[in-house]
Length: 380
Image 1 (cartoon, rainbow, N blue to C red):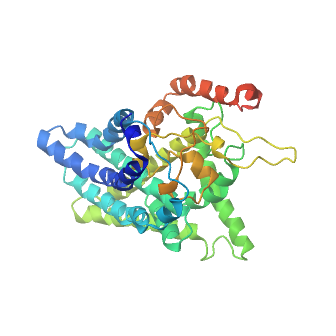
Image 2: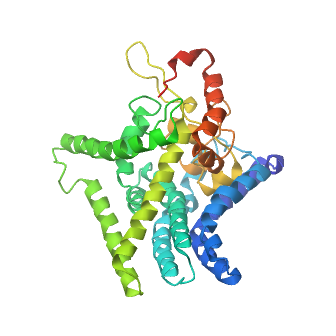
């Protein structure tokens, strides 16, 4: 493919500035509005962000091909210290906040838009939230600076999923690819079997984990030290603020609140669908002492398509992320010996929506990966 012909240093430079593509999804709602009014195809262009993410990006993934380079270990310390990479992710907090309110303003000033178009536009905003708020929030909550931790929590709160900050780090990363983890999909489990359990378990487990963590500090669940309370209050405050904003610019308060929570639901559903994809059918072997083997790159599905890597700050290099959770996105590595998805995340997302197709594509890959360990695969 095209990028594989480049010198490693050239590819790294392209990747460094390629991360600016994160601005595209933030601008897509405004592009939708502009193109709709230029062409008159209002309902069609209300779905523009979804079409770009789930049609255009997969096509260009195939054209551009795989990400050709891993950073050399002697380059990692320098790349980790570059503030450039950190400020790209930190900028997502104010930018997505602005995106929510500007999109609300556009929606209220789009009288030509049909009900289907209005729904499509809010769904598209939720897709942007999945890319920017959820994905970048995920990157930030794994870092050890206070600024990044809080920014990550606030980003997740902008899509009403602050519990992820606790459950993901102290639940999912501990129990990944075991029956104890609701975010690790089982072999032969459909997406629609997976999602309800993931929603409920991950919400409740976040509070359970937080209660246990606070108890060790001698604090109660309802104490001021419970960060979940503050983040959920922030979600509620933003929803009210968006409702007031709608009312001030000619709309209705409760529609503004509804828009906030609908985009939230779409964003965190996208997260759970990606969770379903990332660990489907993989398992950690139980050792003789009753404990599970340590997490390695073989316990997450990997995908190395270049464009989606840029869009998602290398989330697709998920095998390396789970093996080395604190590793920053710019230095995540591709592991060729980890299980490999046949396509990028956007394509796999669409396939996951159709369980027979998903199983036809993925079940043989799981079985081939484990070869003689088929009896250990957990069927639902």
